[in-house]
Image 1: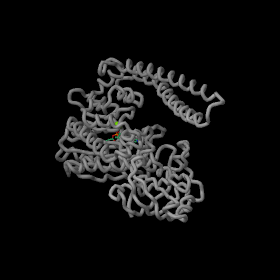
Image 2: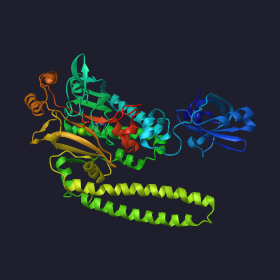
Image 3: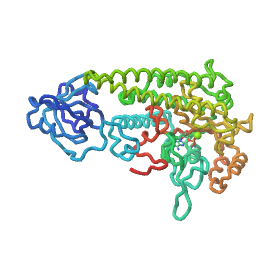
Image 4: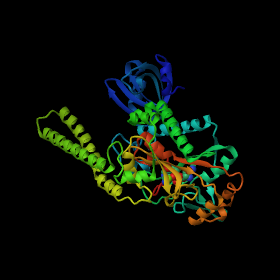
Length: 507
Ligand code: 4AD
Ligand code: MG
């Protein structure tokens, strides 16, 4: 059996293929089928003259998502998706769908699609996202393995919180209370003292009782941990890591990124240009409009965005009105009318998007102007900050109150910790959180107390500071947030095969 992705090796040859029919149309004794086989898409032509009457009649019966087996000749045709066409000589039905397949070409609501996630995964966009996800995972392993990091699996049942107690999923472990892990980091630190450099790659759980486009209850995290690394080295590694993965994925996922209409120019600069590194204090000044970036302040840029959006909206409204006047003419030819109606649909969708964008600007302006020094950045603040740059930015030196207990305090300022967040551009926000770890036993005990965490469950963790304690650092990359950004998918729920989030446990 041959797969669609391998067709270029079989040009002019007879091959056998298996797959599912996603589309069909007929024209004078010829049936055109679009087939997908999991590796790609292919137009297959069943001509009554060459394939015979039986094959042709079989082809005419095929319904959306019926499965088939066929033979035919591979012909180069640049106009077709994938660049090839199959001239079918034999056709056999494996399973003919009698029920209407629920997902048609017309647009469906997201709730409906999410309820049919098990089928939605077959749709082209979802197919492309999942394949990019796969290539990202591969590129991540590649990056760390090439450099000699050891992959470790951290436990999922745990007795302690890592990232605050408010997002813990409680469960039971042989009659004892237990939690699903929020992060493998603490175990990663122990393993780094055994291996030098490690990374975890596993599921993590956070009870986030709100529906946002950035939060899942179950997500996959990559957590490297490096002995003898300070936060500067940590930031260098994060930057190299992101560049390397983006570069590899751009090469391997060209076709998928094209389907997703991803602007790859932005991704290219991610690979080539140095990421801006700013302190938390500088970030706050940027938000408040006190510190310009490339000659413009955040407030000025938002006001400019607002004016530009208003102008575009006015233009589109004029275009819509003009076209509506055109179709009011009863003498208009039907084909011309259909053309204008389609164009109107597109314009109205654009208008909705622009109006939605415009509606957020007042809230961005307000949260930027009123941001309180010492707070964590919310979604709106992250959007404003990343709007100022076209690259991912690294924000470091955070107030200790908003960060986890394990982060190393800054020797120069006891209120700050050596943490770093990476914020992705284009409105995607935080994708990485990391830090240098506190290695001073007394300070760490003090922090555990300040955070009201139970000392007993951390006794093993404190041992790491008693025996051969060394400076060390690490970070966590949220896989689904990263996939969202690379594939330009606004909502995180489409970046994992079966999302688990507030209000969704099925399918
Ligand atoms: O910033 P966080 O909470 O950091 C940690 O968990 C550290 N222990 C990592 C480390 O230093 N080893 O989470 C890290 C990343 C975030 O930047 C985000 O990308 C992702 O995990 N993340 C989520 N992704 C989806 N849904 C959620 N609810 C997420 N919470 C965090
Ligand atoms: Mg974080």
